[in-house]
Amino acid sequence: MKKYQVGYTTGVFDLFHVGHLNILQKSKELCNYLIVGVSTDELVRSYKNKTPVITLENRMKIVESIKYVDKVVVQGTMNKLDAWEQLKFEVMFHGDDWKNTTMWKEYEEKFKKVGVDLVYFPYTRETSSTILKSKILI
Image (tube, rainbow, N blue to C red; front, top):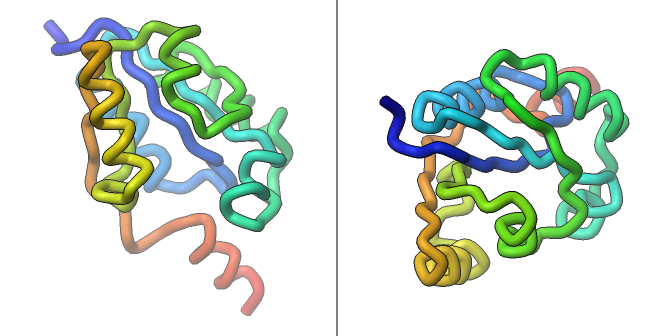
């Protein structure tokens, strides 16, 4: 039996790569039902100052097709508590590249108050959408 019933993770999922697959697979290993939030172009521009290469619609189609994913939703805000209010997940999964940042320390505290666990997975350092873009431009 898996530790959690409903899990949640989010991402841009631009130029889908093995790092994305790793977090989805590891997340699904710990929960029965995995919900994935895919960030809107506007949200990505607001915190990364970049526009995804792949459209939101197509990124959602790609993520939906992954066997580890049970449901895909649009992530239009960085407020993970809003997502919890709507989706009522028990655990949120994230890459450890954000661990110990001010924002995620605040989420850890807020999630603890509502009984949601936060699980970090090792970031796949050898690949990212940024690395792929730089190789394509060479």
